[in-house]
Image 1 (spheres, rainbow, N blue to C red):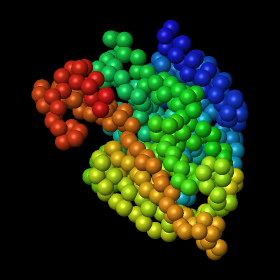
Image 2 (image 1 turned 180 degrees about the vertical axis):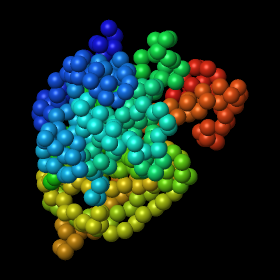
Image 3 (image 1 turned 120 degrees about the vertical axis):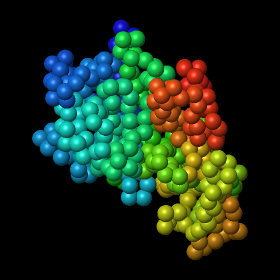
Length: 403
């Protein structure tokens, strides 16, 4: 009964947020699948879905496709009616907007695309969500119950990262000991919490309305005000352009910058100002690894007007480690570049953390531990801060989860 209650509360929370904040997303959510529909999907796949996954689909059978007659072909084209309940991000000409598949599409997409990947023989992975342009995929492993996301090496060697909040039972339990295989449920619960606590907001741009995965909470979205110019900045990890294998540029992050000129009562007397230059300092493990100076931002020189619209842009940066930051400043001219009304000034961009969520890494490390334990290995170097850790059952795995 605990799983049933959790699954219901999870979807109740997502629906309540969507009906108030994103009605189109709410309308796209399908009613729950019947037991017959679930059994039909399992028969086509050739195996049973984990209990917690079956419960999730009983309460909501994913999202309705923009055009059911085209089935999965609709995912290949940009569609103005496309709504992704799992959110996304964009930078330059790249964008992601994730849709949770109904069971019928789970089966068709899995049977169509998974044979092309270099997955282990006998793998029971299925595709549960994707972006309409196929830039990003989420997978469920029906053996261990874990949720994965494809990396930039997905097509070449089937590389994936685990992406659900970690729990020790995911690597230490089994069905006979009450192992729930509830990673998909915890994944959606974490997402629901981010919607309800205001971490993620709906973002409207020229092309579409979507749930932005650039965080808005104060711990991850920084703000600085200089001479009346307010600059807010936050970043998101981009796993589909990252890898666990290469040494350099392993992890990709996208960051969003929002700037506006506050009313003059905020301590300045400018009616307008225009950006001329940018300066960024990128750090990995608190060590500066790149410094960028140049004119404009993404080829533009935004002119900020008092009480005018906010200027928003996105960019990206690679990082060699799973922990880092980006900070810097913008040079502005009061008035405009063509008609300056004073000396130029520097607007600070407060330090923004660049962090790979720890659950992307932990599950892989714990699986490595179990493999080595089966070979009676006593010690394994896992490359965390170049420290060799002795891993004993449960206790030190839990310690890893707090890293």
